[in-house]
Length: 480
Ligand SMILES: *Cc1c(COP(=O)(O)O)cnc(C)c1O
Image (cartoon, rainbow, N blue to C red; front, side, top):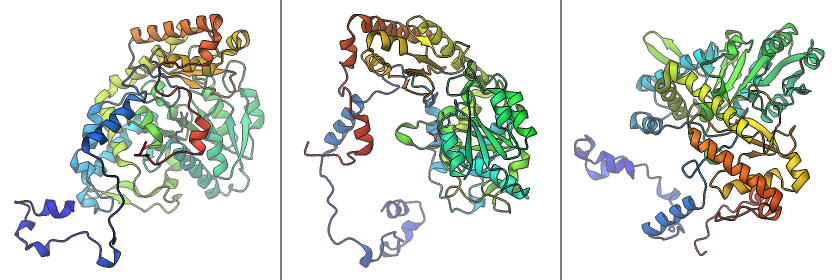
């Protein structure tokens, strides 16, 4: 329908055609439906009220402080969405011939160059659709590398520290590797001696989440990557939370061979409700022959999508990934620039340390060191003394208009609460949040029941989260 309308507009050329010559996308009669679809009939006002009510019933970053650790939406400037909505980008078709999409290919090439510079890598693919998908891709490249060298059968183990993100062991296992868990040392870093003992001729590589899920920068990082390289393995960097280090240090300079970025976390794309995402994978030249295809390449004066990579692991997703997320990432990097990128990282780290120190008295810091962009508290003493759990406290924060932090993660900390304030919050907001937290801890001692039944002020109180995940109600009941 849209096609007919646009083509029949004056000045479009096609308006010269007689009406029945206008090409349509309508399928042949045998494929068209015989009865009208049973669509709900409601007025524009009703649908508008419906969405406004959904908004009122939700808590988002527009309503208040949102310190959800690890997967926080960071800075998503509106300008990036405006760029992604430009018709020249938004209306491209993935099967258009390359000479008609030179601008889009240039976006991919520029984003690759800038993100390579930020990560210290040599090449990058934007095909993977999420962070975990990027991990799968990067580990598949490591596997292809060992296979090419005739060591595919002997290097069967992937070393994964216990403070890694949960998707790391899953990605290694999906690639057929046996996961060897490396324990954490008492300071929250990798136990280097345990790593040394585990590394050997059967090691395919190591997957390191840095900062790890405790929000800590790995202290012995160069020694760790050296141990793995000496054993003949390769080093994988989970860079989902690159916002803590971007523009300050580069994984490529610390002995890593391959990295994934969560462009939808660090490099600005709103990603609530499970998507969309982009798990860009960067690698050193030694892994470039195994990148998913196609890759953007220069041919004469033009850019092309080249499939000429005989050892490629193949495609991991249709077409070129979520292109508009690549575009937003490019806008983000160009807007912040050489000064803004490290300033965002230092701001995120400063805010996290400020809030961590403010909360240190009423709670216990799980690992009492300078943290990166996030930190983990343990509420185990409060629970023992008052019966009030990390969950109760998180629910209580909602009554102060604060979104709960991440709860019960990482698994290696009892009664864990993980906060990530991000660099965009003011010192006043952080101080208010600390006051709210302090008041809730005091309340836990005076009237624990009030917290067991929190929140008291939200439209929905304690939903059955497991039930919602297992038996989701996917249809809106208009009769309700
Ligand atoms: C979010 C996250 C992932 C997984 O990313 P998805 O896009 O959710 O698949 C992996 N590692 C770390 C450290 C993360 O924070």
